[in-house]
Length: 126
Image (cartoon, rainbow, N blue to C red; front, side, top):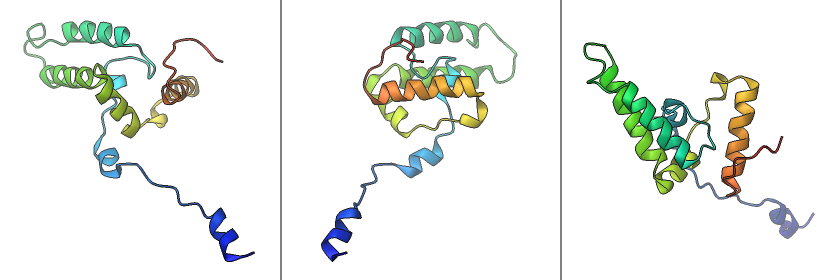
């Protein structure tokens, strides 16, 4: 095989991935807000309100970890409610597939594919 042919088949694939961001991110914002990966903005907002009311420090005085849980919920909502931040999080986020059973993982994978394809629709393709 000629040198030109050999290099033709050795295509360099550019790496557009922030590994440090990936390693430092340990929170699953979708799990914190108890929504699916392909959740709509309305679903995210509804769950945020429900969880914020449930975990508000004024409602749970004296309980340990309430303030940190409330802050996690707010942080997750700030990211997932902003389309630009959500896209960046989705691009660099981690799917913790070992924490899910097969059906949950397939639903999350379907959401990932729909999001990557820019469809963003809530309808079953299975």
